[in-house]
Image (cartoon, rainbow, N blue to C red; front, side):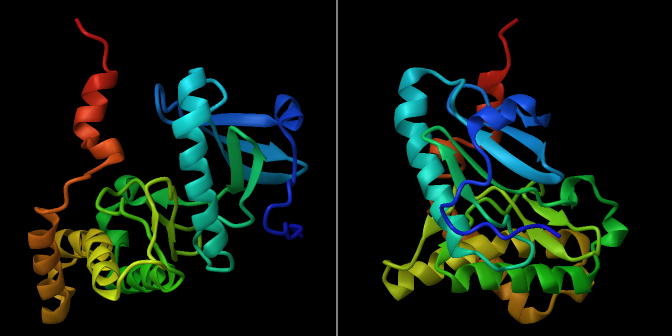
Length: 232
């Protein structure tokens, strides 16, 4: 049985990573963390690590992003389908339980049923109820189908706490967040999308045109990818 790790308590240290079985999930490069799936003592973790980045990145932006994501994950503690038992390894890395499953980008569309989408909607509602918006739900890479068919959400690097915000701004961000779910609904199960959900989706799309910081550091994923590609 997996042991329960208290908030802020380290389940392992950086030295343990040297002996661990590690699988690279995402290299990140430049100003993003290196992300690995790590097996230690029979348990699997996702580790986000800025230690290999430049001094400036790992000691400024890296620390900021890790602190923000760690706080978000600790707020979500106990919500099934989100990374559990998050803790800080050291100044440059955090870890959380690995969430098994396949991203929606790699799943046959026939498996994305109205029932699954309703549960995904409920999961994101539960995240919002803890005062967190994910803000990167429009792509399919951060949304999962777990082995039991239930939804999961990972990668809260872009997340924002809404607990301090005026209610109107908070609702706006939650609607923008939920639009990522309704985008899948409209594309994969349009016949099962009722009028209220469709209206919310259309309204959030209008608001999104006014949303300036799209993607990481205000750059779209397409532009970030093009910057990472070597010039010919």
